[in-house]
Length: 231
Image (cartoon, rainbow, N blue to C red; front, top):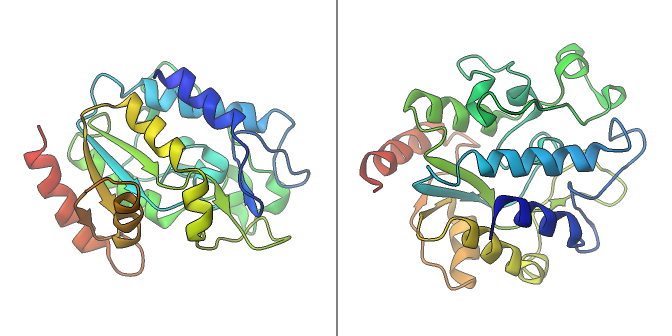
């Protein structure tokens, strides 16, 4: 499967009830423009295409958050990263120089001046990308989520919740489609929850500590070891 075919599959596959498909949604007052979902689909395709020939490891977390992939279209990546507004993470780190990203969240939903100017910022995204840049591994690793849709609380699009086991199981074929784009690459779970979901899909993968909630140090150490040994 090609990156373009996978991005189209993501666009065309409906999210379970109570979840949002970032690649096929327009919420007035939340998404910045009518073509926001198409922009996120294009960003996903460009991100994957930039790594399809260079990736050695697949870093798989649990699900998108509203500060991250809901508006960037890329797992563990926030709009502030795409805007080149993260210290130590150059604008070219995500796409190279061949693609120009665009913010897709409406500034009207911002809670502060930096969000109004540049979009949402996600702490996990900052930690992950800075570590990849530090090890010159921005094209050696691909970021993804076991469950690729944004689970939010009813009527509260700017919230996060844990996807249910039924929701994860209902779209597990998309994980296998993603793996078909990057056949034979080493899979690493980001956090034990992602590891357990992968196991339910018949995939055995070692886990590194998720960087959230005080896990940044252990995540960095685990990622360094992985990048040093990945073939």
